[in-house]
Amino acid sequence: MDGYDADKYIDMVGTGYDSIADAYFENYRVDIPRVVKDKVAKFDAIFDDGSELLELGCGNDLPFTKKLANRHGVIGVDVSAEQIRRAKANVPSASFINADMTSVELPQESFDGVLALYSIIHVPRERHAQLFASIHSWLKPGGIFTSSHGSSDSEEWVDPNWFGASMYWSHFAPEVTQRLVRDAGFEIESADIEELINPGDGDTERHLWLVARKT
Image (cartoon, one colour):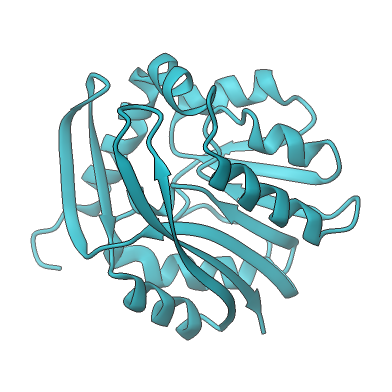
């Protein structure tokens, strides 16, 4: 898009999560909504012990990747240097990369599963198609991609005071997201709109949850 500085918004997300690390943990990683626990448990149950998993937008890696790393080899990627610093301390058995998920370089066909929890919604949507193609390339044949996405059409939403920092979100309507995932080479096994009570402010949120298999 002419004049749209995607890198600016990716930097906003990274520096934002750097500065609100404590507030984010207190509001989003202490009281985990049931729907999130269920999705992670179902993702974990798919794989045999020792599988290789990738989490995109891992944050401080409590409690999700810590749970997965008990059984599997796990790599977490996050654009926030502070979140990655905390993740390394919290889950020393996993590996972590401080990088933008849309530009990180990972070996092709090296993962059995990819998990993205509330992270792709922070990626400028003009980069979603290429991100889905990259995820497809990183997965082994038959690999599983479990992810959450926006439930509405929103090209650009900036909150200048999200827990004290500027934060950015961007996503397509559910039908467009599903088309892009299919176009990347995935077969969608489930697509559900799930509600949760946001532990941060008590508001009800709706997200698209996808489980897709590399074909």
